[in-house]
Image (cartoon, rainbow, N blue to C red; front, side, top):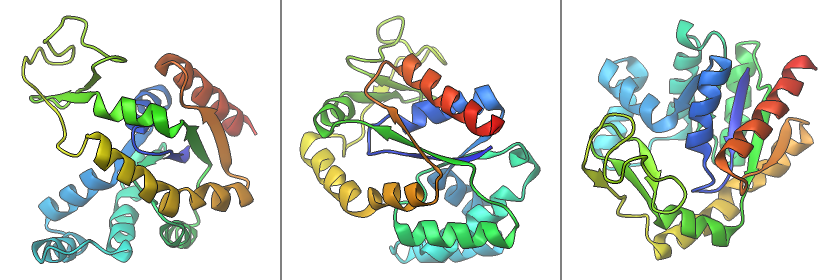
Length: 219
């Protein structure tokens, strides 16, 4: 199962990706994590990325696709993967499709998580994470079982992202609708798109996505 989770910032893609990873035995591939791992490995593509980053520039689509190309060849993603954070534009989607064709591979499904902008602002501005292990929480929707104690590692220090404020969130949503939302039409025309209600309870969203993917697998 090779899939992409689409949705605006704060839609819950990371939470759902982690759950799908466990349910289907597939690997969540975060663009940021892959980039850092490539740089740390000292691979040829990693060295290219490091040089660009050291110059304070954005890593090109070509380099990112090259890193993804290396990762999807590894044994750990033999059962499939969930792309998290890529593609963000139609140009990136086209580059991804071209790379997969070269490998005689293709995506199985693209799941769009639909959430209203007003809800997203409330979701994102309430997020925080465990400073020790990075587990995510929310002031309203996902609190630790014991207040002030991380469910995952028992840590007691938490942090919030500097850019998780209302003004920045609204700017990120504008960018999403301009750059990433066109992917919905792109994958819709390919017959890969499935949409779920991202505003439902977290468990309900998981059930809906799993149901969608089970039907794709059975088709």
